[in-house]
Amino acid sequence: MKTSLHERTLVLIKPDGVQRGLIGEILTRFEKKGLKIIAMRMAWPDSGLAQKHYDMPESDKILLGERTIASYKEKGVDLKKKPVEIAENVQKRLVKYLTTGPVVAMVIEGAHAIQNVRKIRGATNPLAADVGTITADYTIDSYFLSDPDERAIRNLVHASGSVEEANREIDLWFKTDEINDYELAIEKILYSREWEGARKELTQK
Image 1 (tube, helix red, strand yellow):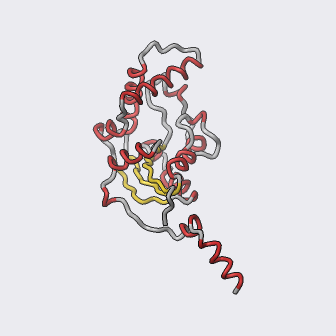
Image 2 (cartoon, helix red, strand yellow):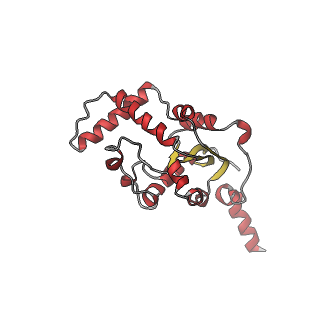
Image 3 (tube, one colour):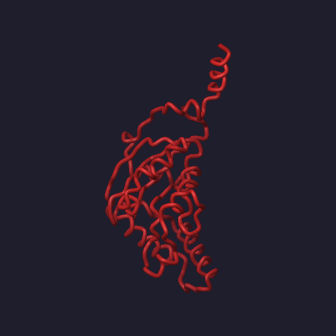
């Protein structure tokens, strides 16, 4: 059962999440929300796959670099680097991080799936994440720790940020025949307008 607001998104449990034995705990967060896992596999990404995953157009590199420069200025630090150079350095760190060990890749489906998954995941910087989210509850890393070590922040989970990004990433990680279209028993309760009517009929009998 699908609504007009159904979406699909890609989620990766990153190498630190796998190594810390948090796969089940992370999966449970999404399932308890009512989101549906329609594809899942474990893989150890090579540098080629990781590079494609974190690939971005020049315009996005500029935005990422400018955001990084602005955040450092708030801390009183002048990076004195061009935005694209900063973004490409971030990419290198992310590629190294993703290839450290096995990841669990999955496609998650549901109404407002992209926004809901990212809310459950929390901010990419765990120090800024709200309590109750995955990044706030299960990791203690921060950019204050990762930047001096010139490494990516270890934040357990990747989640697509937009419909376009989700479509690109799903195609990168899964073949069409690896994605399953099925109904969950709870979907009638979550989405069907007839469900309340059915409950009324039962109480009237």
